[in-house]
Image: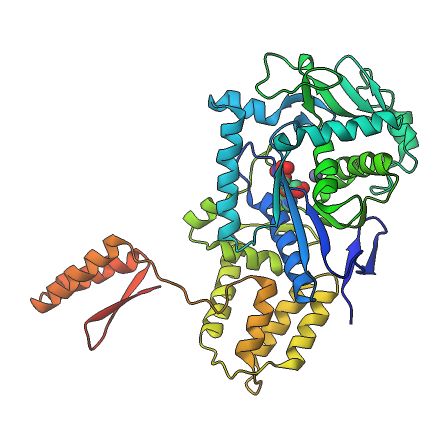
Length: 455
Ligand code: AMP
Ligand code: ZN
């Protein structure tokens, strides 16, 4: 058996063969930290985490890098409009760096809640300006750049096979030319460096460069940082499916034109989380954040479980009703797992089935079905250790005992009820129990007194 993954580049499931047996190199396109990450954005990182866990389950060591975009991502993908970071800074009356720091810290909290393990390296675009300038210089030397009044652009007509990842119809684009070309030579050309003078008002973040004061285009950071930390050719690069036609297409053009080598062997893309059938993005709004789900009574791991019930390569529609059902199923599964007794054995038959499912391009719905089958199989041995192994991949904390946090209010009411009972005021005691129930907790009387449980 061998791990097979779907490669966007070849549109095929392929057996995964890493460049080096020692270590797999993986780059995941990261967040633009100008606003809250919604649960759609977070899907991208749950996928990356699942992939890394699967590779580790397969026995590989993984070096994982995630970038943090804190400059250069403009409101339009056509290199126009305002810088998202600068716009947010203006709106919130803060510096761009304060905005980046704040939303990045919220993002990290969400990752922890979703049991997403941290990458080996986080890299911020603003901390790698010189690497980006060096790369643009290489592209300039190799004859791929030209200057316009607002910046330095990449001439996509010079790069053979431009658009091969997305299977773009370049002739169609040329003929249509619906895009406002401004001074661009080809509709698909994109900015490598933008001059500050191209933007309205004074920018907060700008740097000196051989071409003039300005800031890097959005795509160049990923090429520069991927090469710096992982080498000129890497094993796996991931992102949302929206990145295929522009961002990743441009990353390939930049990197391969600079090095003359293949940039990435396996491109993997997760499909969008939709809301009422519509694709949603941060700029359009419409999807919840993890904190909002928590306020509605959903643990973040219920959301993780929800995604694992679908394929990462298919769009999945989100609704609170579906999540409610998923919550029941997750709670049932967790309850069963909590009561498993460790007999020190592994159930090889079920583990093999599980491995087979995961090796089939991370078929998590199938792998979860195997887990359910195992826990329901009355005769099966080794349930505890096998679930433990499976959960190293799922990351659902199935065996971790819940530490129940009881709100102060509930504790007080329970104390008052105990006191009322002592005074034989049963009516008041019942009323107090009722109040505790309304807050989502139960009181069970025990020999020693009482215990509080979550409903
Ligand atoms: P951003 O912070 O906007 O740069 O996006 C971060 C990541 O989330 C990117 O890899 C996007 O492709 C991905 N993404 C954005 N919206 C969704 C969505 N609704 N479902 C799944 N992934 C998404
Ligand atoms: Zn990227």
